[in-house]
Image (cartoon, rainbow, N blue to C red; front, side, top):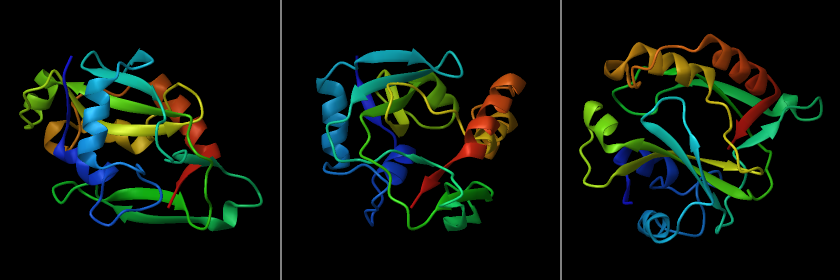
Length: 184
């Protein structure tokens, strides 16, 4: 099995200006090398047949991606319209400022097949391309953000994957994201 860190994931996981809420203690090249040198602890089916989640025990000091929303920290939530890339339209996102989460126990690496990445305009030689990573306390997936589900349903031309909306999965995601938020 071969794995490639896509340009899309590279800019989000390893930004030019390092941030505390991205992958820590290794470069993008070291991250890709680690994924290729070590088998995942487990593989979980993703939201579509071309998507798999490779679960690795965290070998870095990367912190959990989300923090539960409580009455004590709700006042620290912020929001803005942001786009993930220059080509995408901005969408409303929210996050905590001034909150730090614990070190993650797992890195859940989101992989797309070579064929799907080609459909989305990203040509790779490897079998799998990294499109994202979840930093979690449990070896499980965090529900996809509802706005990401909507973007995916809009299609490749809008930065999504073309997978239709799953209403039950959307409701589950809303329930999770009403109680949790990312942090910066």
